[in-house]
Image 1: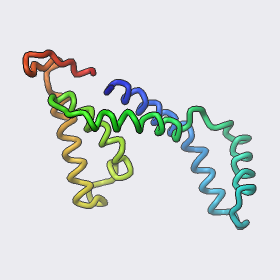
Image 2 (image 1 turned 120 degrees about the horizontal axis):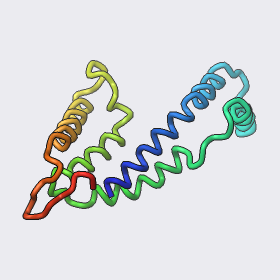
Image 3 (image 1 turned 135 degrees about the horizontal axis):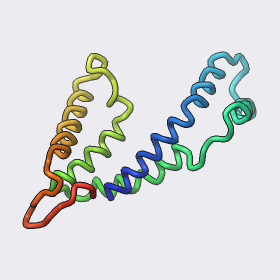
Image 4 (image 1 turned 90 degrees about the vertical axis):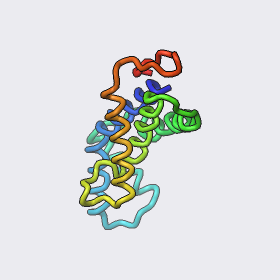
Length: 144
């Protein structure tokens, strides 16, 4: 399940990068626009963006988030008895906390810094661990 999450997370970030310029242009148009907001007016703006940047990729970020959500819930409901399991949960937390995760420490509240530190510590411990861990006489592959 961790590898499924990783694939969807990469797809999300790749898609977000593809539409970044388009979204920035959209927000700039909204700032400069003096007309009252309406569905018709927003559709006109999106049409202009389609002409300039091409259509939005499918699946879009929202579609990918809808696919990630149930997988995240399932993973988070399962107990983690290994460093590998904790690392998968930490990657999910890192993804879900992205709105504050990349802020400088000076800009982050204590709760945000604490969450980041915990996530980073778990991910670093998992990265430094041997490729195969022996837990309860079972071999656990880190790539899961």
